[in-house]
Image 1: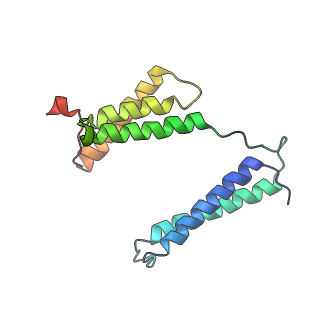
Image 2: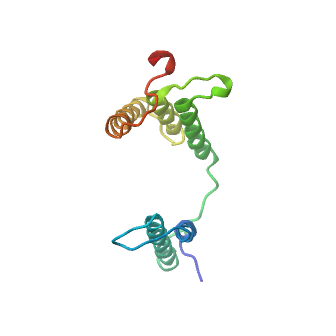
Image 3: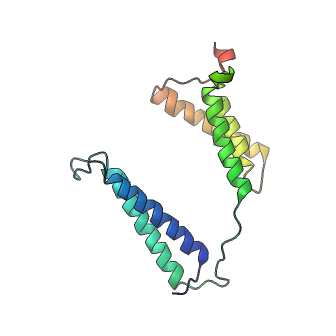
Length: 162
């Protein structure tokens, strides 16, 4: 077996393993039928489809020739740190930390912080574009979660909204 594209092979392997794990985990729930779906139906179907996609990707990595073998590069620690940090800051800002008396900053400020921090994970950073994206995400999130779904969560910082 000669791997012709390492990137495709390992991404296909990842899809195959994650999809298989989801499908296997979903079997502990009631699957039901197509007409009467149980709680395990969608995760099982999604896991199987993801595993099939991974298998197809792995197959193509063994068949289709690439010029340099598409070598897998080093591990990207910086982007992972920014993405994980952005999600951590989002959670803390949205809910606050009562143990140290840090109040909630609300949905809007949390989305702006998430977008600004996560955008540093990329190679290019344009503040105008990032602020535009954050504004679109904040408005969309407000409309989806507060207006349409009527979820009860702080929108503005507690020291402003009361």
